[in-house]
Image 1 (cartoon, helix red, strand yellow):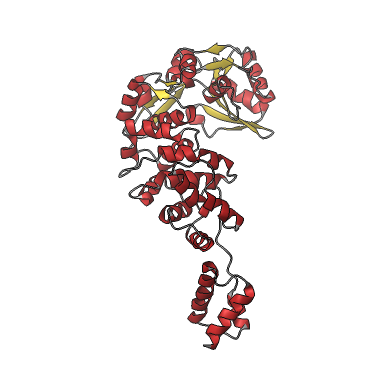
Image 2 (cartoon, rainbow, N blue to C red):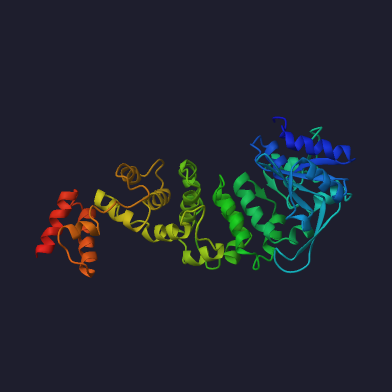
Length: 404
């Protein structure tokens, strides 16, 4: 395992906390990724034994402080493009139904064990002293991480936040880890019916972008989460999703990555539109995600044997989505030959551009009216079918119809 190498801002914070008589620890995903020798992108830091007023004063000396999480004893410290999530030890208590019905009280003197008790899984309850590198592991998270086991820290605190059941699902997919039988039972008991769409979406997208989606889906089924979160789901798409991971990772556009995995997940669903309603998703980073997925699901297994088939398919949905999923549903490794041909034809993502526009018909003497749209459709259909492949051929066909 490589030694943790915190950025300068993290070290400055840790040294400032030490000067105030406290200790700053890396917590949660930072430590987990460090132990797995994975890159660290997001820094979560928990500060012990420093009162909130003194901590906020220190943070303001170090950079810009965003106090949007003040009610949860969480602050964002930003300097030169780096943002740290800095928190005090805190206790959660369920004050009402759903994810929002949770009261949080910050207590810098709560102690390591009690502060860690509020965390969901043992592998997320490991702390690392940012100055000494010492690991604090009050609930055996290191062993569970090494053995690929997902275990709840505390039964009561786990159930206080129903979102944690979906976190188990995505962690299983991301880490290829197995929940304990007790944890499966806790997930079955979680009241997920009032979770907001944006929180469900966040965890589900992590599952779809994980290395082992089938593992997460299997856990979701065993915990009765699929039926409760996505009613009417009767799809077994885990193997398909696993086969699509290399194709997904090679795709540069983040919206299209998600579209590919959503298409594979919903390929055999009875009501894909209703399942997307649960996620309340339309666009993702400018990409028309919902529209692309529904079109692709509807166009799955359309003919793709000839160039004209591929041109026709591209008018219905993105060939990249439909052909990748259809290929993954089979057993052959590698790239779908039809997708390779579609890519050669410039049809990987988009339909072929029509050879003629309305202005071309005007130039031929056509009069304005509905018949112009009909004629453009006739010419484009001929272009898709292959009987018209050049602009001159398209003009000749259009002229013949106008003359007739």
